[in-house]
Length: 283
Ligand code: MBD
Ligand code: FE
Image 1 (spheres, rainbow, N blue to C red):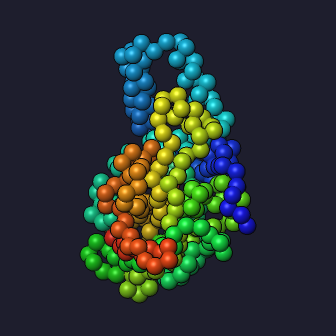
Image 2 (cartoon, rainbow, N blue to C red):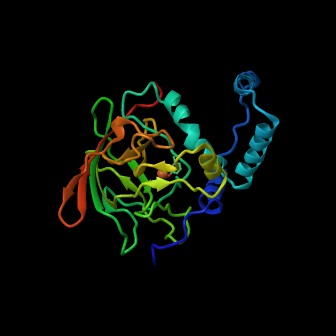
Image 3 (cartoon, rainbow, N blue to C red):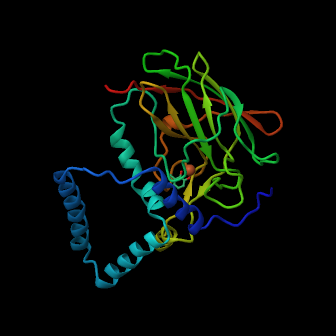
């Protein structure tokens, strides 16, 4: 299979993220009326204050209305929210943690990726391009005890910045796998280094980026979900030192604790060590 495919489009990556979200998550019924009242009112108050402070015109109001309509039509609400809002939700949800820092999930997680054991290679094409990356690590609890049987779900873009199941032309589970730690909590993963990632620019989010003069880049990143019985699920991303977008990630999801320290090996290979510490749940 060839890796040279059309650029990911809004109707592919963005809208597919909407379908994925609907398949996995449903709106929670039963949010207390007082809470909805409080939050909706404060968000509207903030909008009103911005309009007054900057004398927003009818032309600008109609531009906003047209743009909001197009976000839905392009299926880009998950993309919009995960890029510009989720990082603050993640921040307030995890302030109590003593273990690993996490960061946002983003729009491209798919549950149920193939099992790869404690020492394995993530599903990839025979001719997968990119630097080979060998990652060893260990999952422990905050008290230092090993977490055997912990799951490390890994998903990431390929060397062209494309995600399987969202961009066209990739095998279903390409660069998506579930690893399970051994009795000492250890895992060994072989994958490739992903490329920096540009969010789709041909839909509503791209229109906002262009209209505001922003850029569309995220630094290269590996997504993980790490889970073990009796522990809080850790959702994180790992980054590579020196990436020009580590300091201006459009999704504001980089933290210094999430930077890898890969060591170059022979023949376009790298090795890296990165461990996870999970917080016990229910405290
Ligand atoms: C991504 O790959 C991503 O991680 C986020 C947060 C938003 C868009 C695309
Ligand atoms: Fe991503």
